Amino acid sequence: MTKTTFNILVGLSLILGLSACKHDKPKNARTDTYSSGAIEFVSDESFSPIINEELDVFHSIYIQAKVTPKYINELDAINMLMEEKTCLAITTRRFTDAEIENLRGRKFLPITVPLAYDGLAFIINNNNPDSCITVNDIRKILSGKATNWKDIYPNSKLGEFDVVFDNPKSSTVHYCVDSILGGVPINSPHITAVNKSAEVIDYVSKHDNAIGVIGSNWLNDKRDTTNVTFKKNIRVMSVSRMETANPLNSWKPYQYYIYNGNYPLIRTIYALVNDPINGLPWGFAQFIASPKGQLIIFKSGLLPLRGDLTVRNVNVTDE
Image 1 (cartoon, helix red, strand yellow):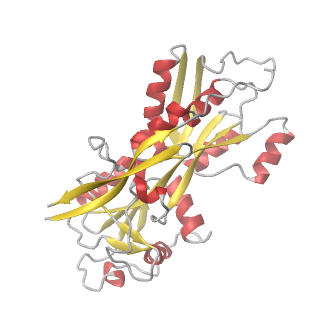
Image 2 (spheres, one colour):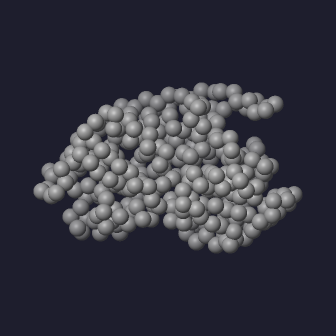
């Protein structure tokens, strides 16, 4: 039995408030306001757990509001925003300069609202004994330079890698291409994609040689308020920046390791808003960035973007 001491984040102090609308509303068919009406917005599917929690509280406060999420992949979400099919998209990137220029050319005022940080997690089957991996090892797997578990772990008997993403056009794929491969497309015959993050977890739990790639907000055991317990049906890999990974230089995407920067695969969650009347899409985005919304993010195990954090130690026993 081993006992591990973790630093955890236990307090969050916030002094922000909801912003008021700054622009006059043009005449159009929409009747929603900052806190009332009905709208639909889009979000990358990997953020559905935290977005659903935010919506539950938002609707309990603003009872005249009905905000409906549509969970799709990140690429389609941004395309819908640019095509004026929605006014709000939750993504892992800001508006590009070209997108801002395009929207401003159509008399819009696009706004990027940073919301939170999460980690990109790599998960494996419970029967897999090799749980430490380097960023460079991940790069080799995604580029096709490593195709067998023995290429990374010489004593492994698991055979070929079976890498599974949540969606071929998701934010997880975008992060791997942009931040791990340096813009080079993923190139391996052993990489597939399902449709949802829950399907990735299910697949990995049933296949010994699988590696799943998902957002860390899918991992936390909601029964553990310290945010140092992950789901029991899979294992979460520890990731290292070093040339060789070991338990002393590798980190899991715990909230504290995202906070102090030890975990190397961190991404920012944004609300991309293109709301010409500063109505309900803007109101919900600002709610997530408000003290109440940031506290929900904190309790979920992700890292809030705003607020003063308090740290304490806890002892976790692994049997």
